[in-house]
Each structure stands twice: as C-alpha cells, then as structure tokens.
Amino acid sequence: MIQRSVPRLAALALLYIIICCIPVKLYADDTTSTDSTDSTASEEKNAIDKDFDELDSVFSDAADVTAEQTKQHTEASQKVSEVLTALATYPIKFSGHMEAQLGYGYKGDTEKSGAYCNFINHLYFSVRPVNEVTLNADIKTSFSNAFTWRVYQMYFDYTLWDKVFISGGKKVVSWGNTKLYSSNIISDTYKSVTAVFSIPFGSASLTVLALYPLSSISESSNNNEEQKYVDDSSDSEMTIEPKDAAYAAQFSFIMGQTSVNLQARRYSTSSGTTPQFALEAKRTIFGFDVYGHGDVHVDAARTMKYENLHEFTFIGGSYRKWDHPNLGLNAEYKYDRNFDSSTITQYVGATAGISDLCNNKLALAVVWNHCITSEVGYVTPGFVITNVFPSANLDTGVNIHYNEDKNDSTKPRLYPTVGIKLILKIDY
Image (cartoon, rainbow, N blue to C red; front, top):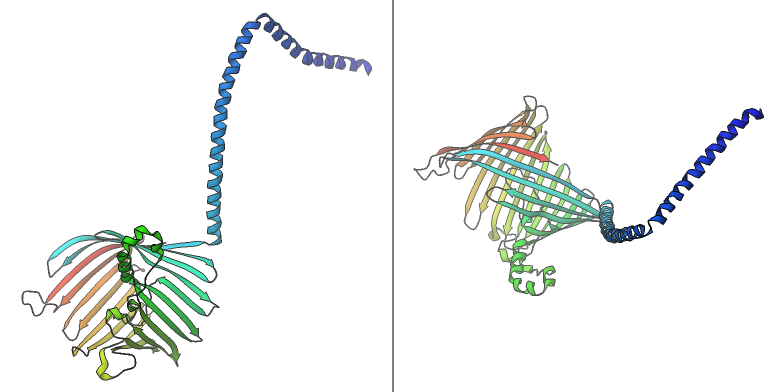
C-alpha cells in the first residue's frame, strides 16, 4: 500500500516545485536584465511616469465631468421624481374630441361653389387635489380661414358638506328644455367669468349665478396697460365694475309628474336690458316629452304690469324617440311679441331622423324651419354614411331656401345650398 503511494507523492512534490520555482526564475531573469541596462530603464521609467501623469490629469478631468454629470442627473432625477409624485398625488385626467371636415359646397342664390376645410379640437383635463375640489379646463383649437386657439373653459368645482356646490371661472352653463329654438336666458356664459352656487333640497334645488363679461375685463386691462409694464403686481389685480355684472337664479322642483323651473335674470346696468323672468314645465305624456317655456322682460321686478312689459316669448314643443327602429321626432312652435314695437313673430320647426339602417351604416334626417309671419324658411334633407373610412363619416345635405327675398324680383324664390363633406371624429 505504501509502495503504491510513493509514486503519487513524488508526482505531487514535483508539481509543487514547478509551480513555486518558475516565477522565481522569471523574476531573477528580470532583475539581471535591469541591472545591466540601468540607465535605459531609468529613462523609460521617467517617460512612463510622465505618461501616467498626463493620463492621471485626463482621468481627473473625466472624474470631475462625471461628478458634475452625476450631480445634474441627480437633480433632474429629483425633479422628475417630484413631478411624478405630484402626478401620483394629484392625477391629471386628459381627454379630448377632435373633428376635421373636408367638403365641397354650392350656393344657389349666388351660383358659387368651392371646397372648404375645417378643424376643431377640444382638449379637456381635470385634476382633483382634494376630494372637495376639482379643477377643469377645455382648450379649444380651430382652423378654418385662420388658426385660432383659446381657453374655452377653465373653472373649479367645490363641494361643501356634500350638499352645497360652488363653481367659478370661465364656465359654460345652459338652462332650458327646448331643442330647436333657444330658451337659455344665460346664453352668454361662454364669454363671461361665472360663479355658480347651488343647493339641493330633496327633489328641488336652488341655483344662483353671477356673470361678469370678459370684454369688461379686457377693457379694464387695456386701460391699465401702461401701469402693467411698471408694476407686474397689477397683473393679479382686476377691477370689477358692479354696473357690468349680471345675476340669475333658478329654482327647480317636481310637482306631481311635472318638472318646473322658475328663472329670473338681472342684466348688467351697462347693457340697458330690462329684467327677465321665465317659467318652464316639462312632462311625459304617452311616451312624448311635452314641454313649454315662457319668459317676459319688464321694467322692474316689482312692477309686473301690462304697461311695463317689453317683450314676451313662448316656446312649446314635443319630442319622442323610439329604439326599434332608432327613430326620433321633434316639433316646436315659437311666439315672439315685442310690446315696444307692437310686432308679433311666429315660427314653427320640426326635425325627424332615423339611423342604424343598412347594418348600422346609414342615417336619414330632415330639418324644417318656417317663419309664419314672413313666410320664409328652409327644408334640409340629408343622409349620413357612417364609417366610410375608419372613424370617418360622409355627410350630405341639400338646404332648400324659399321666399328669403320675395320682395326682390331679381332674386330666386327658391334656391338650394348643396354640401357634401367627409367628417373625421375622434374621442380620446
């Protein structure tokens, strides 16, 4: 057993000697060579040291640059982190609606025709920093004859105790139940700074609204333009003239199966328009929505007498929609009386439409508007082919005018306006 182990031990000993002695031999040879060429080695060493000094300076500069980049990167990362934290804390929701049109039209009274294009985009965003407050905005861009953009809406909504609703800013508000003829007594909110205060009472609610025209703000800013360049703090100041402010109120409630709205508006003193009062009612009868609106302008709120009336308007109508087929009908009548000029004007209008034809590809519609007093009006039949291209519809209509210039023998009594356009609509 011992004899068999001797060769193995000898082999291991030889391997150990080889491993340990070869490096020593190499180092001994290097030392001998260095002794014989001492001066040459010294020069080479000085040159190498010089090169390393230059390399050290380069790497030193590189280290400084790297440190500076790292510092800037750290600051940028901190800023990005702060923004992301803010977005996570107050998430901003974006959405929008884009509509582009490309069409061709012909107008019969002038016998002129031509192509046209139109582009409108609404970019909406909202942020809710706390549960009670929401900030909303609508940026509108459009292109027709020129490219324009504006802040269409920008306002806040504030909820107090889950019962009181407050809103303020540039906000579009609409009142009224009519569809063909406008009955909105606050139709100028789109060009005003608006404050809205609303309180619900069970099935009833009270809404108070104040309007201040943007034109008055612009005029005030223009008057102080010279001062604004001197003192930037004036940008945050806005002078409000009480005579330019308007106020409106609406009380809504349910009476039986009828919804009722009582409305009142005090116009700005500078406008010269008398106060306005309105009453609206709406009820569903045999599947038809039947509604009516009446409003009157008077000299003062406390003198509701016939001799103090300036203008009276009544609008009545009915609407019905069926699901199978997808059919809608609407008809309205409007009566307008001006007591100052002793004139009466009456209108009647109707719309009808049916959609989801030909595998949901075709819709047909017709619109009619007629002035009973002057016997002037128009009829517009048309059709829409949906998804001609992805997200694009083809809209075609013929607007037939009649009796618009019946007192002028040189003008046609009947003429068409024809239009065809490709409409691209995208909600995002």
